[in-house]
Image 1: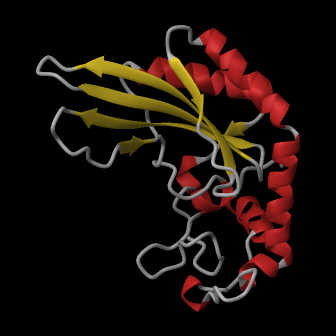
Image 2: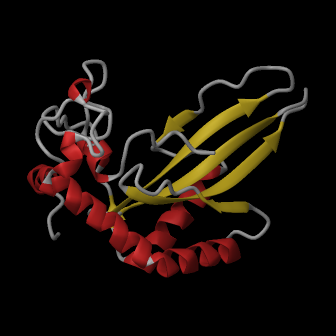
Length: 204
């Protein structure tokens, strides 16, 4: 993929996701849902099988991360078959004077469908006796997370030769494609969902 144009990335999405098959029409009495029997979904599954076959390369990359970020928790937060990327995470924690802590996760998501990646952060404040709220997700890391995110991006590019996902195209709508369970009226799938996955903010 030489050009990261809207058209070329939409074409990638159409290669791996079928048109139609809205979730509200899914028939769970069948062994496979209708969209799972399409050539597009079979190509998506083949991409995952290839990623799993090459898992040692990803494991070696994680070891490199642990060496570059000594003293930090570094983990694999990949959800095979659930998204379109493998993911790693560097955890940053800050203690609060009144107790509790702020947890920032610097996440590297590497697409299994295109030579693209995305580095982003989720931030969550945890206080004793309080229910945690949904972590705040940002694609523009700041503060302590910024140098960590820049280093993580550098390491991904060195290891895989991938380029950053063009965020100006993140919200390009793909309403006709079946991408996970996003095709409901309240949540239409986007190009970012197709190339990397849905629920990117869901990081343990």
